[in-house]
Length: 424
Image (cartoon, rainbow, N blue to C red; front, side, top):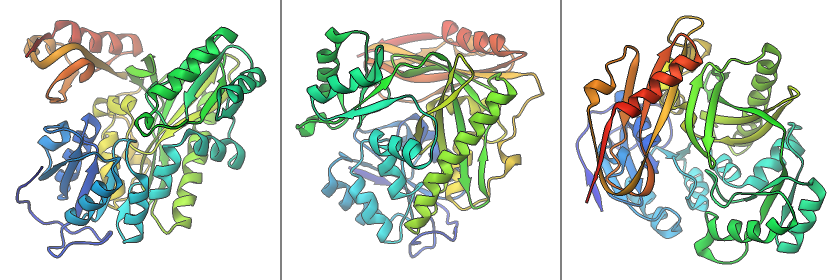
């Protein structure tokens, strides 16, 4: 399925431009993050083509052209790229046939941030080896395993408790905590059955990591653009089962810890961008660098997402330019500087986001919105997802306050005040 509408023409001097000189951007994945990216790209005059595995995905409601396909199907993705004639491809999800991204890059299409970075960041093993063994970033002790017996050996090496994750997965899928030997077999089975590529059969490698004495987690949004690399103010977060539920910015951290966090973020993104340059690609875009802060003040690298991060939705109210606006500018070649990532409120104030997760089956209706947004300095983004089946993040509440507690409370109160109904 595809649809297309007309659009005005704006020429950015990037990639393989089409005959009408308009920059065509193909979004691979059209969820709530893709929706905001599409809004920002269209504001800057780009022609947006949104693709996903289902109809009426959030970004499809914004884009000028839409396509429905299985993006893990290499042939289908290759056919889409050939027919869409994009100047730029932006992967918004991880379940993509990365081989086709590499092929597109050789055809002078700008892959964001690069085809090689996309492949590395989708593979926990490749990313961890780059971060720790090549770039020298501090991480938790870890081992990789290709079998149940290797997992047992890895668990013995890192000790209890430890965490097991498939190397090809995200958002907590297939993840387990092992507290004793009796948990190992269940963790292995869960990793195999819930990994991203489970439908392909076979055995997936897993990573087993020591359970860090965690104090809190930080997201450092880091932007690579034609002006270099800049880092946003730190974002604190709360997760449930590996999924984001709340975030706030700026997180109140010790200056020494902030300095370490900024240095790790810059080095991680710089290392990835260097790889992009080796492959004659730009490496431009927003990166969500995830860090662990331990109780002793040590800061460890965890992961990096080569795209706007879900915890970064707070930037829609906290920064002059949201992470989505920064991403759009960076990939279009517009310089992103320190001024670009400035906070939008007075010193001492804090902004918060609160994910609204709906459980049930059917279409979702939001009402009582005027009452929910009756407090000053609050906002709401309803994603427009067509249905929920089980539980699904359907909206995000946003607020600012005099401190973290007030901002988080105001954002949570928006959800409490909303009337959410599920129909069939």
